[in-house]
Image 1 (cartoon, rainbow, N blue to C red):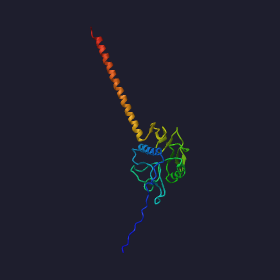
Image 2: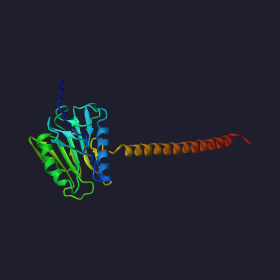
Image 3: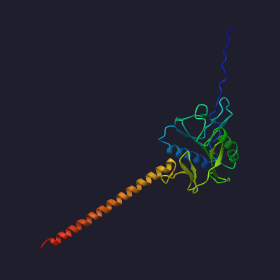
Image 4: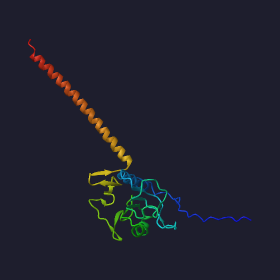
Length: 235
């Protein structure tokens, strides 16, 4: 009788729990927009990874030690797509995390998640934002100082991020990024396209106006030259 050789069970780290990525459409848009904006800001830096709504495992061999940041950024990791984030395979400490809160999640965001980001993942900056302003505070940031989080002070209505070198704030009711050095807002790709098209339209209008003005000036000049020639011509 042949003896069958068994294999050890493979430890599975699930990629999803089957739940939707966010509670509402406004939460989904805020999540996708923030990933888009941060990724665009670091587009020319190859080892800055920006993602979100991804299972992040922080203890090898224990799939129950998992958390799913809505948005995160980490330096030292390539931009390649990841199906899950394992801290023993990638950078163990994150630079930036944003959680999009609601009345049903804010206790977890301010307690359990905050503790994991502070004590386990050593996230340098952690932000909580409620798109509907239903919780208080609806927008808050924490920065890791030593071993503990300290709340970030608002500056002119913005929360400044040292790790992004940008400020976080609302524009027309939506969470956006602001570049204080260049005094410009950074919006998601659809807004950048709209703004670029608007600039092109403005440039085309200015060009058309300048063309008409030039034609009018040339016409006036031709009339003046004709009148001058007429005056200089003896009867």
